[in-house]
Length: 64
Image 1: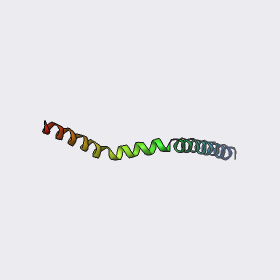
Image 2: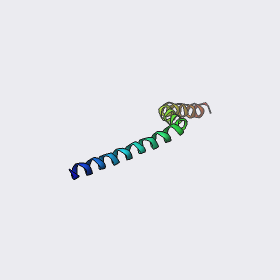
Image 3: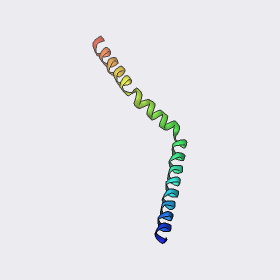
Image 4: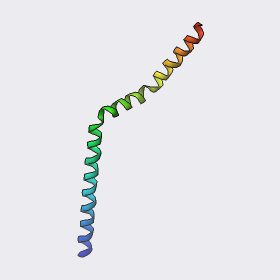
């Protein structure tokens, strides 16, 4: 009986810690969602912007 109670209380404490951790992460994401969105947008557009910069550099080099 005691082992069942100690197992249940340990599970309860671990669950409570997981809930608090999830709340903390959710709060950080909500507070920084603009920064996160900008980072994802920049990472998604990186190949295209790199290509455009290389092409501009090639065109500048060829026109001289």
